[in-house]
Image 1 (cartoon, rainbow, N blue to C red):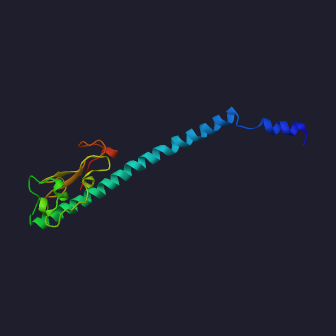
Image 2: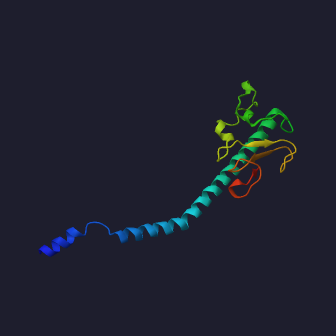
Image 3: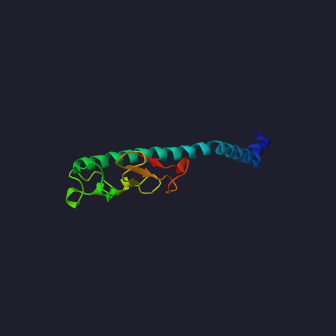
Length: 146
């Protein structure tokens, strides 16, 4: 190898500023195109999880009502009773839920029970208020009623 070939190879070790700027621009464009779709899917995944949890809680409340020989939950019914053993005041088959976290929606808010008359069901509704934790809203803030 000649000296000029050695010098050329040793001079070209890193990236030029232009190459770095082009790569950063490409990453930025891809991020602006892809990131909103990913964020939207996270919100819809949390909504699906909240619907599933609300449906499970509603089924467990119905099971509690049947076990207690009631036709509807009492006016003072609290979802926390699903966590109690029969000795602690829960239903005969209790506890119906293993952990207190099972009464928390994907956004960290507690599920709420709306007693008779429910908006959707005759005896009660299980409600998740969405990401904002307040009644009403659209998108990820939309209320989920089961």
